[in-house]
Image 1 (cartoon, rainbow, N blue to C red):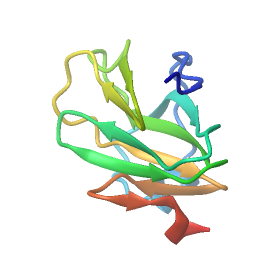
Image 2 (cartoon, one colour):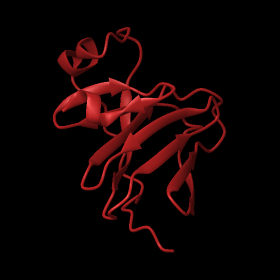
Image 3 (cartoon, rainbow, N blue to C red):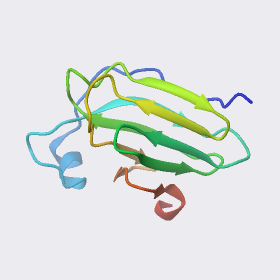
Length: 119
């Protein structure tokens, strides 16, 4: 089964200091957008974020922007799609400190992160 996603790599654009503070990040770190993912199916979809096994659970219709800490070893990402899940791998960085932007909220990705709890 094909799962429609939009995961085109984005230009590395750091977020403002206010956005960084919202996520509780140190001033020296910068988040950059690496892609947008939307669940266009009628079933739940799980984003598996490697290498530290973070999970983001998307209900049907949910859309997120995936962000990671700026690093020359972050992009390009690799994406693997299977039935009910999408796995995202950074290029070479072990812990990109994944975050998602969902409905205007910046949320650190954990195990698991259920977007339905952030509506």
